[in-house]
Amino acid sequence: MAATPGAPTGGKATGWLDQRTRIGPLLAASLHVRIPMSAKTYYFGGIALFLFGIQAATGTLLALYYKPTPEAAYESVQFITSDVSFGWLIRSVHHWAANLMILFVILHLVRVFMQAAYKYPRELTWVFGSLLLMLTLAFGFTGYLLPWDQLAYWATVVGTEIAGSVPIIGESLLLLLRGGTDVTGDTMTRFFGIHVLVLPIATAGLLVVHLVLVHQLGLANPKRPEPRVTTPEIEKEPQRPFFPHYIIDELMAWYVLLAILVVLASVFPAGLEEQANPLQTPAHTKPEWYYLGVYQLLKVIPWKVIGIMVPIVGVALLVVWPFLDRNPEVVMRRRKIAVGGATVVIVGLIAFTIWGYVS
Amino acid sequence: MEPEVGAGPVTEGGSPAVEGGRPPVEEGDPPAATEDRQTTRRSFLRWLGGLTIVTTAAMVLTPVVGFLIPSKNGASAGGGKVLVGTTADIPAGSGKVVAMGSKPAIVVNTEQGVKAFSAICTHLGCVVAFNDMVGAIQCPCHDGRFNPATGVVVSGPPPAPLPPITVSVEGDQIYLTEA
Image (cartoon, rainbow over all chains, first blue to last red; front, side, top):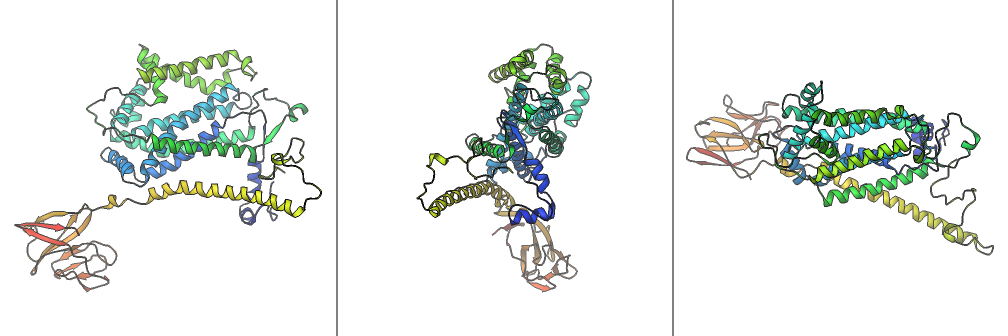
C-alpha cells in the first residue's frame, strides 16, 4: 500500500524510485480502489484509451516521413507505404486503429447510456466523454485529407461544404476550415496542424479530466441509483479490487485488440487512390463509415438545412442529456422512454449507414 | 492489503482454495517436496509472464525500429550519367559546383583537362569552391585547399583528398558518372 518516506515498499528499484519521487502514495491512491462486482464495463472505454495510445505512437512515427504539402504529401505516403521498412504496417495500423477507436468510443457511450452511468453524480464525466467522441470524429475528418488522394480530397470538399451549409455561421465556418474558399494546400497545412497538434493536446487534456472523474467517482452500479447518503447495506455490497483484478482483465483485452489490429492491418492494408485532382470528381464519392448515416440523411431529406441541423441538434442533446433526463432509475426496464428513444436513434443510424453504404 | 498476483486463488471467505482440485497435503508427505512443487509452478508462471512481456516488446519494437531506420532509396543521388553543363560554362582555369543528384560535385577545367571531384570537404563537410585567385579548390570553412587537377590536399586541415568523379566530355557537353 502507500509507502511512507524512508520506508519504501517493493523491490530495490521501486524503493530507489519511490525515495526520489515520493510517488508511492499517489500510485496507491490511484490503483488501490474497489469497484462494484456488478459493474460491467466490457472494457470499451479502456480499449478506446489504448487505441488513442496506438494512434499517438503510430501518428508520431508517420509524421517523421510525411510531408504536408499538396506537391509532396501523396508521394510521401507512397514512400512510407512502399519504401520505408514496416511503413505499410505502421500506416495500416494507424488506419485501422482510427476506425476501431471511433467504434469503441461509440460502444462505450452506448454502454454508459444503457446502464444510466451518466446520472448523478457522473453528469460531468458524461459531458467530457461526449466531447471526447467529437474530438475523435474530428481526428477522423482531419486525418482523412492527409494522404491527398482523390478519396481524401473530395471527401473533404463535401465535408467542408456540409459545414458551410450550417445556418448563419456556415460561410465563416467554411472559410475557417478550408483556410480559404477552396480545398487547397492551405487546407492541408491547417488540417495537418489540427490533426497533429490541436486535437492531440485537447484530447489528452479532456482525457485526464475524464479519467480523474472516473477515478474520483468510481464505477457506477448498474443495478441501483447512486445513493446520496451511504448506508451500511450499501457498504456491504460485494466489490473487487481495481488493481490487479480489473487491470489484468483490461490488459488482456488490449492484448487481444493488438492482435486484431495487426491481423486487420496485414490482411486489409490501408489503400491509396489516385493523386488528388481538383478538376475531376471521381464517381461514387462517399465518406468514411462513421459519417455515412449523416451523408445518407442529407441525400434523402429534401431540405438541406434540416438535414444539417438534425445531427447538430442530436449532438447538442447528447452532451446535455444527463441534465435533461430527470428519471432517477438506472435499470433499463424502468427507463422505457430513454432506452426506447436511444434504441430508435441507434437503429436509425445503423439503417441510414447501411443505406448510405449500399446506395 | 490487496492480494498479490500469483498468490493463489482465495475463496470468498478468505481461506485458501484447493488449487486445480489438487488433494490437500497428507501428513506423511515430505514438506520440502511440496514446497519445491509450488515454487516450480510459480517460477514457471513468472518465467512465462516474463517471456510474454519480452516477446511482446520485441514484436512491437521490431517494426518501430525498422521504421525509424531511413531507407537508402530516400538519400539516393539517382546514379548514372549526369549532364552538368558545357565547356562554355566552365572555361579553362575556372571551376563550378554542380548538383549530382542530391550531392554537390565540383568540375574544374585545368591544364590537364576537365576534372571532377566530390565538392564535400573531407574535413567537416562544407562545400568547397574553385578559387581562381589562388588557383586551387578551397573550403570556405577552415581554408583547406586542394589541388584542382588531382584533388589532393595542398594545405589546411582536411585529412584526405577529395574523392574523384569520372568525367567525360562529349562534344562540348560535360557528363559526370556516379561510381
